[in-house]
Length: 341
Image (cartoon, rainbow, N blue to C red):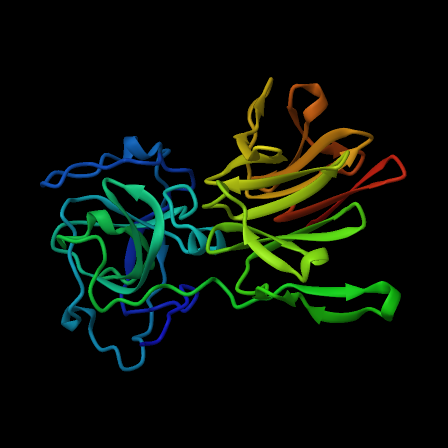
């Protein structure tokens, strides 16, 4: 088997490029047509453009001129190239792979580095990471590539965004830090993790290739996929009066999955403030009330499950609370939020 490529390994080719930076979400499921024409930017819900200039890039070692590379062209004009990031690498979609950093047209070349499954565009669920003849590296739906089949021949599957594994540090054992591993092997190749205590048992939730898994410390760390929860990029779990509740982010939308006698019920979180979404999530059981904290465009929000999911920005004497990641706890009735910025 050939090398498994990590999308984080950027491919750079020489070019001086003027592009348009669309810093917004793109509509999911835009399919266009198999024929000519162009992709209408309005269908991607893109705002007015601001022109940026990308610095001239040095030639990549041993790559030569892109014009000499085989690559592929696309079947229509105006195909957006989405920026690579952890969410996009985990589960490519028009929402996760943003902002748009380039646009390619019929006749332009796109050299694939790897491919993986994500949101379905047209009738194809594969997305391709590679470099355009304009010198940019990013993701495009395979649907737009001028090739008759879903999977490109000879192009490896994209590896996970990282090879990170789950570890457990025990404060009662001098913070001995050991990998979480058991009958299902190591809990590894994950991008996010959350844990709860459930009736004296440690239960760990992790995300691998967009799929949510549940590992049970009371069952030799047996690690099983949570049915119906896939395509997600962030997770936070709580124990609400003996019920396992897991919050995840999928394509920017917050979902709540509750373990019931009939299995997991996974529903989008929405209420009086509309849909609740973001890029990161942390939840707490606050005296029997579900409080969920999300990061949306750098601002931390608090959604109150006991108040019809009213979703308000967190702000106080120090101004707005923001960051790129969030974690919350209930400390004897006081809410504490930790962020990274």
